[in-house]
Image (cartoon, rainbow, N blue to C red; front, side, top):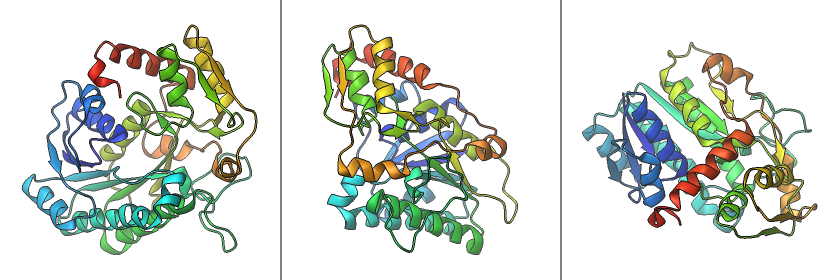
Length: 328
C-alpha cells in the first residue's frame, strides 16, 4: 500500500517508514522538515519520499494524499511530553487534537483503506500498580490526567478517532504506545543519556528518578506492531479498536542504569532514589501494559527484552560514532 506517515522525519516515524518499506509498502513521509542525519541513518537504503507540511494544515495534507494516491495513513505526528504540554498547552491541543481531526477528515473524504493512530499510555488516568488494560478508566470527574495536557490530548484524540469510526465508517486502529526508545530517540526518559553518554565514556548523573517505572518498548517492536496493524483484515462492527503496544513489563530507571552498567564497559551512572513532585505525579500513570489484546488481534508480541533492546541500541549508537554527522 501507499502509506503516508505523519511525523515521518521524527524518531518513531522514520523507524516506521523504514519498516514499511522493508515489508513491501510504499511509504511517504509528511513532516515540517526533511529527515535529519539520524533519521537518514535509520532509513538507510529505504526509498521514502518526503512531503513538507504541517499536520494542522488540512488543505496541504489533503493535496498531498490526493496527489500521491495515498491508501492508508500512520499518524505519528504530535507534540510529546508532560513538560512540553505544561509550557505550551494551546499548541499541544492544536497539534494533537486538531491534527488528528485533519487526518481523520482526509481519511473520511478520500475513503482510505486504513488509519492507524498512535496514542499513548498517557491516555490512562492512572492505575493501582496492576497491568493496565485498554478498558481501564481514562477520565476522572475529580482529577486531571496525570500527564497534564499531553495525556488529555491523547485521551480526547482516542474519543475523536472512535467517533469517526462509528459515525463515518472509518477503518481505524488506535495503538497506545509507551516509552519507545532506541537509536534516534529525542525524549531522554533516562535511558537515552544512560546509553549514549556511557558509550561515549562520559559520566551520567541524575539527582532523582531511580524509582520511576516505565514500560520501555524498543522501537523496532513498536514499528512491527504498526506494520501488523495495517495488515489485518477490516474489523467487524463493535470490535475493539484500541490496543496497548509495549514490552508488557514496567522497569525502574534504576534497573535501566544497572543494565547499562552491565552492557557498556566502564559505564559510570548515578541516579537518586527519590522523585521530584512532578515525577511523583507522572508516576501515577506508569505501570505495565497488558498486551494480550494486541497479541490476539494484531498477531504481535515484542521480540526484544529490555536487555536485548539496550544492547542493540548501544551497538547502533556506537556504530553511528564512526559517522559524526549522525550524532546530535
